[in-house]
Image 1 (cartoon, one colour):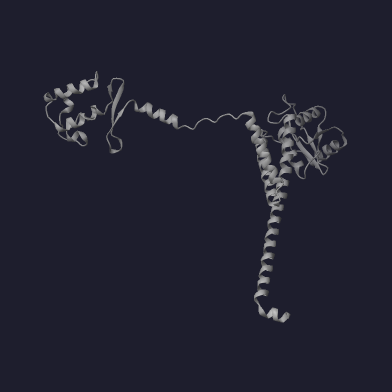
Image 2: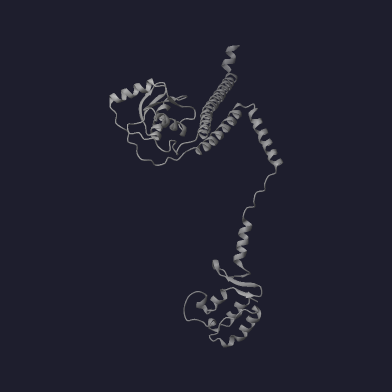
Length: 337
């Protein structure tokens, strides 16, 4: 019945609303308690464009959803087509969107996880024992690169943000004062060790404790890579606000506390690692360094193997060509006879 209403109204386009009483009554009986459209909406307008220009000023009222019992009838004119929709379209769209969402992944049982790990181990074992050397080298290379990425992600956690501090103005010392401080620093036996953990809060704390009774302090860096002692000197200068007097070839740095030295309240800086975290960082750095050397070694092995295979193929091709020429050339056979 809802689909027949536009056809009935198209056949009888009247200017007055009095003859439409029967049509309105049938519409009211069809829609139940739904209100009937006002008579003024059925009058043909004089001008305009669209459906209203052809005499259907009731178009706006008809596009609204009409309640028929427990359902609603709606006319959709999107896309240049007229369609009747029954029910709440918005809720249906929401339900459709919810249905289109991907289902949640089911949790794997413990037995399934164990079986998956066994499968991965079996697959890795086959690659490790493969008769092809290239397969073995590529498997080791991929494993080493994955480990390198994992170590880099781990080391990012130990990056301490540097807090903005006031610019340190080092004191100007004469050559005589530097010579005197260098000799006194060499003679004294107290020192601060910088070990495998590198520079952390405990090293700066020990320097301030030594400066409480002495003007100078020696910082011994062992183990230390070539050139790393200068990085340690720069970092300790920033953290302790001291002055570097001398850097010796045996990786020893002599620091001077300054003429106007005042012991700070917090002797261990906040933007440094603790003793335990510094050791963890050192272990990850050492592992990353060894992994990098191992990757370089594997890449060189793979390159050498590929060169060897290419050379072997060239030799095989050259021997096959020589054999064909000797067989097809009659002069060589006659000369041999």
